[in-house]
Length: 338
Image (cartoon, rainbow, N blue to C red; front, side, top):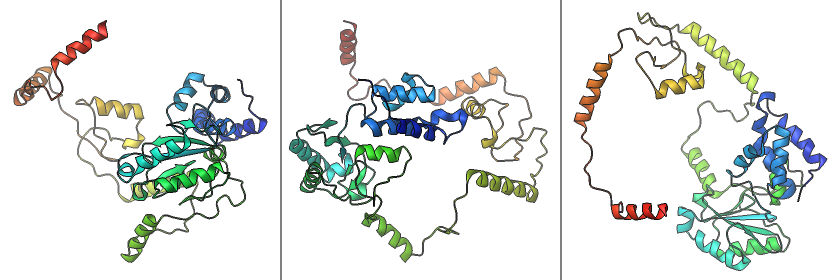
C-alpha cells in the first residue's frame, strides 16, 4: 500500500532540512526517519521513498540507515513499545523473569504486537540504567526496579486506556507522539512535561558531591549557552592572545613548523598515522618544530631491523586452542562444498 504523507508532514520535513547547511542536508535523515515513523507508526517502504525524495538520496542509502538503528521499526508497531532489559545486570536481578511473564501474559514474543495493536514487546540489550535494575521502558520512558507483578500492572493499565506514570521523566505518550519529539518538535500536549522526577541513585550522587564540597571549578549554572559563531569567535580570540603571549621557541631545526592536528585535512592526518615514514613530522602541538633533517634509513637497514625483530620474537607453538580441532574444520569445509 502506498502512503501519501500529509502536507503537515511535508512542511515539517522542510523545517528539519532547513536546520542543516545546504551542502549537508543528508544530515537531516535521522530526524526525517522519526518524522515518517510518527505518521505511520513505523518506517515503511513509502517512508523510505519519502526520505529519499526530499533529500535527493536513493532508497538503498536511506534503507541502510533505517535498518541500522533499532529505534526505527520496519513493521507496524503498537501504540506502546514495552522494552525489557535482559542484559547481564538486569538479568541477574530478574529481568528475564519480567520479560517471560509479560510474554506469557500478552501472548506475544520479541518484536511482536498484541492483537489489539496496543503493545509491542521486545528484549532490550541494555537500557543504560544498571543502578535501577531490573528496568523496562515504555516508549523509552523508564519504569525502574520492576518485578513481574509491577510490569503486569503497567501493561494492563496501558491496554485499559490509561497512561501510568514513569518512575522518571515526563508523562507517557504514544510511540507516534514520541517520534514527533525525536524528530525535533516540542510535545504540545497539555502538561506533557509535568510531574516526573529524578531517580534516587542520581540524587545520591548529587548529595555526596554537596556533602564533600565537590563541584566543577568555575561552574556557573546561569552562564548562557553561546551560539556556535560566538564560541568560534571566542576560541579564535583566545588562540590569538595565546600566540602573542607565548611565541614558539626556536629549536634550531630547519624543518617547517608542524600544524596542530585539528588544522590538518582528516584524510592526510589518517594517512600519516597509518603509514608514517621518515618524512612524517609528529604533530605534537601548535608551533612545535620537529627536526626531521637527516638521511632516511636505507632499505637494507630496514631489512636488517626486521630480521632482528623476527629473531627476537619466535612464533608461538603449533598447539591449537581448545575447540580448534582440525577434523571439525575439514568436515565443515567438505559440507560447505557439497
